[in-house]
Image 1 (cartoon, rainbow, N blue to C red):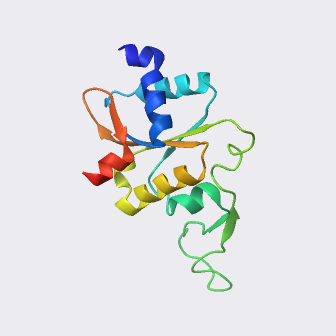
Image 2: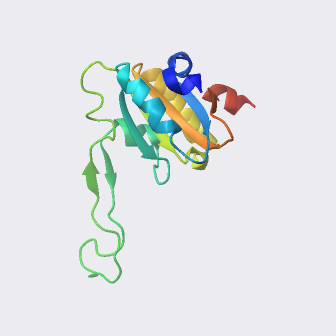
Length: 153
């Protein structure tokens, strides 16, 4: 339990790797404790789901277009079948303001493909302040490893 009291080892591993795969106990609570420790040490944090993310780099760092969900019978006139594309701001837009480091925690990370996980590693290498934690599943105790090691195995 000393890890959850200080979080120093987790923070050091996160800063060294940039992108970490983590396995957490299924009863929950570990993510909020660790993120609270990161916030106390100066990080800006955000939790989000990995489901429906699309291209990680574009979703996190670039202005991109989305289409609204189909709501059933619609006029066959202009854009009736597919809907209009709406431009949305990058998910990390406001977090990138300033010079504080950023920690982004993805829930349900097991839905990411190998190429999406590699894209997350590349995003961390390009944006030096960004640290990404990807929750890859459950475990009896809290454990993590660098994403590079997970993908090489």
